[in-house]
Image (cartoon, rainbow, N blue to C red):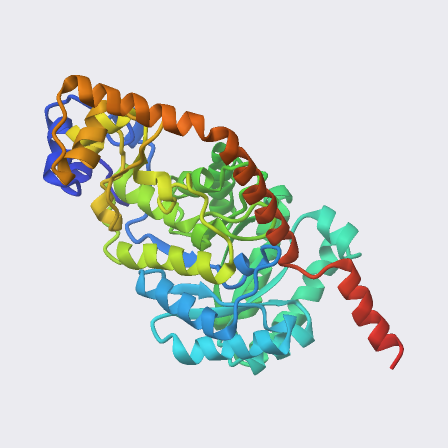
Length: 441
């Protein structure tokens, strides 16, 4: 178990960031109060897993080419996230080809694919040259009865039959289950133990999936600890969805409770509201908790964010933590003045860690300090106090005056963005045209 404390946190800070904590001008209550840190049970061997090229690609309209998938997985592996779920071969022949290409061309990644517990999906996984498969079924009785038309017991029987087929063909088994967060915890333990015993040496692991984002941090940590008790200390990873904006908090809560691994996607892309943005979990552990995470290359992590956004055709929101344009960008005169004194006045994250810099924008909220230091002085302009005040007032006036004409541009931009996102998937008319072609051959 990793011991979290203030000294560990301070050692990882740049010297100029460390000083105000040492002088106790500011505090980090994630690492200082004993009643807080005594509740942490972080594993001494934390790992991270990625599912950008499988669950991430399930975001509406996102389609990666095989070549893009190879590049994404290799970049993510180079960032220190080596366990990657790379796709779902049962979707299409092109997806089969993509999974095969990744296995052949991403040597630093430990890859596995997804398959339903049916023969045709397992065969597709085998054709993709997979060595491990996330062979999944559902866990909640609601899913089992309503979606699958089975009973809890027949679900286990069905799964074990598919499991035997996969194991007989040499596949390592990552046991995946949907809707664990809404399932009966005793049934969850029952099916996991049955599958682990049947898989034998082919067992590669399992986890807890919050398919609909229904956990909060307390319930997620409770379920994790209760599951470990019932499973006799079995190692469990964590997979959260972000429907209530709690995927990062849930992941960290479970890591605090002892979970050895968290899974997510780059930028949190994925079904509906997305998955855990894995870069946010990693940076939070490093900066808030003082965890070294020696395996992580933060430059490559930022590179992965840029690539995934570009390949997916999904812009990074400007206010997105870690990777957003505005994460280290300031306009307000009060904030800019503080950041000019030292970035840590208003920036919690040392920007050098991510290869970023503090930046300043000029407009309605600008103050004299930032206009002077960031705009005028670098160009040899040396106004007196009255001139500087007049310049700043005119900067404010200019932005406010052009807002009326800018609003039309902003309206058009927002509408074009939503139109583009809508066009990323096929229309109903296109599907009907395809059906007409097939039906009238």
